Amino acid sequence: MTSKQNRVLFFPYFIWIGLFVLIPIGLLVYQSFIGIDGAFTFDNILTYFTSSTYLIMTLQSFIYAFIITLITFCISYPTAYFLTQTKRKDLWMLLLILPTWINVLLKAYAFIGLLSQDGSINGFFDWIGIGRQQLLFTNASFLLVATYIEIPFMLLPIYNAIEEIDSTLLHASRDLGASSWDTFKTVVFPLSLSGVRSGIQVVFIPSLSLFMLTRLIGGNRVVTLGTAIEQHFLVTQNWGMGSTIGIVLILLMIIIMLMTSGRKKEARKQ
Image 1 (tube, one colour):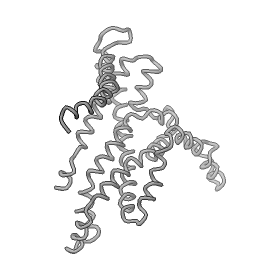
Image 2: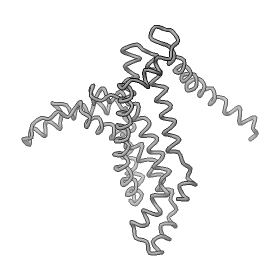
Image 3: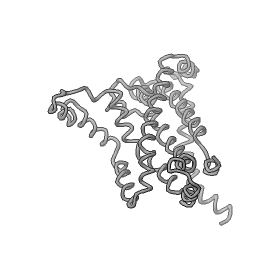
Image 4: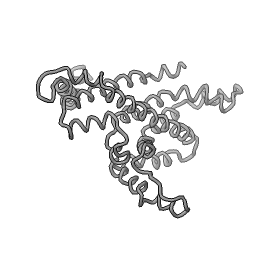
């Protein structure tokens, strides 16, 4: 295929990127320099980097995203590893990723039904004598639901990375006298780091901008950058400040992608 044909085939892709990525980002950059009165200003940027409220909100977003990513990794990696050892791994994998086919909003409302005062869990607590507890609108409930939703996105890339490891390397490690733990530590885990990096990207980055779950599950107790953007665009109508936070969020996402990026060749050299 000639280079001219390649350019023709890529043309719709470039149009898509321009219309739905570059132009919206350009509008955000432009709007970030517009004050609430419609005049050009740098106040939005100065306010973000000098206000303790926004800086604390950014730190909280990182903490929540880190905790969600850590929990999903701790659950997903052992699960992915053991799935590769089972006979019907494709069937088990399908069952584990089926929840991703369900709309996030539906899953959130399902958890509201489970965690509310009149929900199934509190009904069970009341039946065994513990009494009804405040489970909904807490940090713990937010982390629980967010982790549940993000687990498949961490599990799938790790599973694929482990599945792609050449079995002859594992056999060679055992033939040389390495224990199962030594084989995992020196062969399996280093060669699966590409999947771990991909999992961190697809979990940590969206977790920074969560806003719907913070409303439905966490109530007003959980505030993240995504929540602030929603507030400025839909409630306070301060689009300039909302755009500024959006640009900061995009820059943070790019930094995280650069920090967690790595080629398979680099992972295999470790």
